[in-house]
Length: 133
Image (cartoon, rainbow, N blue to C red; front, side, top):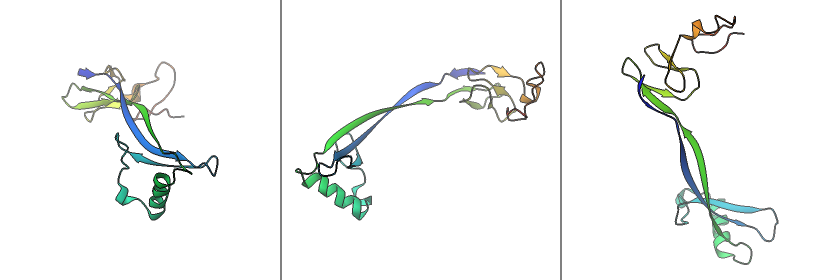
């Protein structure tokens, strides 16, 4: 395998406009919004959601709206070019397979076919790398 791009961490930001109900402790409402605090897809909200949004925005004695930003991280799979030239996602520790039949580990090193795995230990695996019990 060549041209290996290792897996990496991606970051996504999520924003919300939310408020706690002062009259009902533990209750609150929230809406997904953009970085400027504008509610996403307001025309797609249900009637109940629109009533809640209006309550949150126009009843300052009951709700205090707050803008919240949250950072979410996730893993982006690595990839590499198989010996045959096709691109292979490296999203698993051992069972990254190319359509040509080659198997690679998460670092792009070529592995034997799963049918040959476990010969020394007596374990058996199917053609997809799952252990046969």
